Length: 400
Image 1 (cartoon, rainbow, N blue to C red):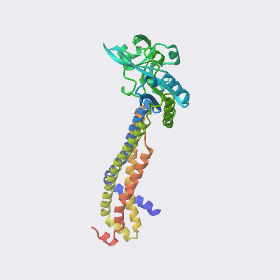
Image 2: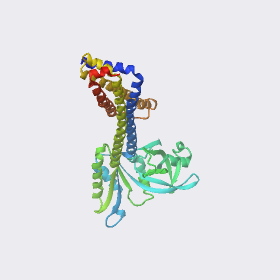
Image 3: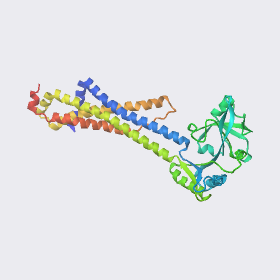
């Protein structure tokens, strides 16, 4: 144990004697180690952002719609109905909310010209299942459906096009399908879907019972349900499909989908990207290790006479091996620690100045970065250390 302590002391003294060389050699380790931390941080941040966008639409969302009849084609009698919504609500006991929509369109004078808008008839649970944010006013409630109140909510772009300032929209009147509706709120999607969902930029929400004035048939275009935990999504989707199919003729096709597959694909892509970038960062550390080995070989050559003297006065080869190996490991570990601090400084400083941005830090990446830096020091320090320990005392003393 004593000779290990002495070896470490000699290593520190040697690095102090060649500060510039030690710093330049350690810079590679610092950059390589920091890059591992930063790569993991960047990929985790990107992954969390992508997953948050998907989950914002509704990570635990289940949605069902009628496709077709295999033998007879589309049939109005096989479409989803309000009774199907009630059946799903009563039989799927773990559903937090069940909603339905009826999709319609109308034309309004927006910005001096008539344009198509989307009109959705729905119920109060639609806010939860689609993760909608009410920006002002209130959402539809049970009284609106029961009393068939002619009220509506508008998206911000629609409210702005109609009234100029969306904040003045509450209480104003808009005409939908020839009837006057009172604006009770403005809303937006939890995550922007850019019109790829049922909600477009210019959308008005009205009570489903009022939508019946414009559509005589008692059908709905889509049924939504949401559950509490992600692991419930797949089995609940199967149960929703079973409930709906049991209420209609055999052969009718009802598609029940969820976002689980998209979430899983996003996680797999993020993992593959993380592994790839970490391998690239590890290559940087390997290159730095080669630099350490070259410097240590030069050091062995420069200190050949010193090694010969130590061997001549009784130093064992193992002690010489440990001394030079300790120097390489010390250099790589010091560079690794500084690299870790640098890699942590970036995300932590962002957290300090931007409270609303959450940047994750991977403990696994820190452990891997430190382990790789130590491994690089050992692997690339063995060759020069072994060469130093195998020098013959007489030849070493005669070296000029």
